[in-house]
Length: 343
Ligand SMILES: [Zn+2]
Image 1 (tube, rainbow, N blue to C red):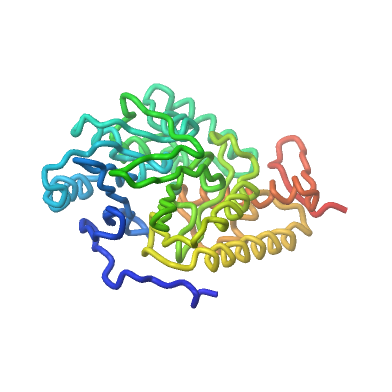
Image 2 (spheres, rainbow, N blue to C red):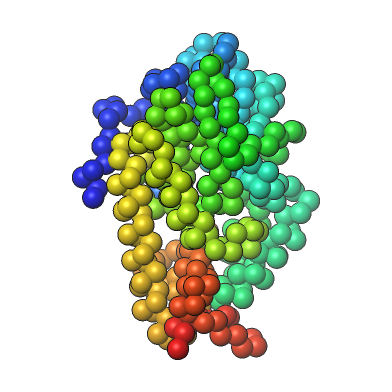
């Protein structure tokens, strides 16, 4: 299946660089620490200025890129609008900073605004961290000093330039006009509650955020602050919608390279999730907590932050199988919830 994915841009931009694509869209790559190493964000010609889709994380190297080579590329034309696909800090981290520098408005879905506020509001962070630790404990995650500091909100606040003063709501089906080109907003669930991806039907382009990535699978997890308690169902439902886009679009993902072959990639991801669910059913012959499942699914040492992500994914698989009647939930006082194959 992987052979069906094609990467038509021979020389992707290096971090801090830009490439012009079709229909007034420009591919910006920004540095990002950790295994991902970069995030792609998109500049779209918008009349006399530029609309910006996603911003990069608030890190010195990213601000330097925007103030150096990218400022030259913008050529003195203003940033007119800042649109965030979702609240994660690599996507929204510099939204407030860009908004104040360019006197531009920030747009994101209402559910993503709520999640960004949850992590960024300084006053609420200590209670939020406590509440999350208690919620994770119900699924067997031990409270450690490392976990407390990872969840203290410091990490998120350190890489986000603050809450934008004003956010305009983006909703499913909104039609945006960028320099006379039509872009349609699609709300897609699974990776987070209400990510917005952008489709330009006349040019066959899809800005896919973290929903569809070419080489890695997106984190699909259950977290205490999120409303969606069955993100696997939401994620797979979004494939039906994205798979119907005609003609099959060129995909502009947040990580990795621009690619052709959306249907092939959606089929690979469906297979991946079906295989994971099957493994989980196998492990659940014995009662299994989300924490125990995380060790079996991710067989490598994980730091606290990655352990939280692994726990979220494990729980998403268990909850999905419990909702479909394949597993049953076992509760006993003082013990984490465990899941077992239904009789
Ligand atoms: Zn994300």
